[in-house]
Amino acid sequence: MSTTHDPASGEDSARRHEEGRFNLSAWALRHRALVVFLIAMATIFGILAYTRLAQSEDPPFTSA
Image 1 (cartoon, rainbow, N blue to C red):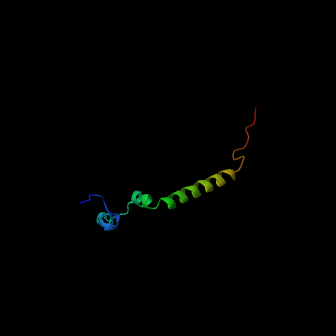
Image 2: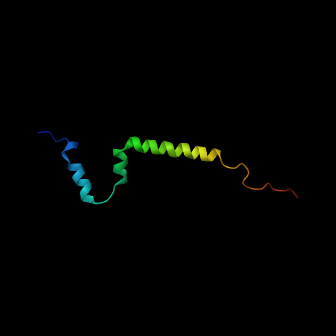
Image 3: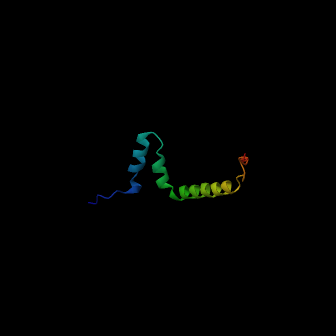
């Protein structure tokens, strides 16, 4: 008799519903492609926002 876990058996699904709360880590592991896409988009938008920052936010100092 085999002791390997059969993912199609529904045990994992039943265990998830028993907890009664959303497990973000488990969701992210099941949806890796979406998580990688979202991280890539956040990185790209962050780089674009950084390149569009104003160059001189502070006034120059005067020497006395």
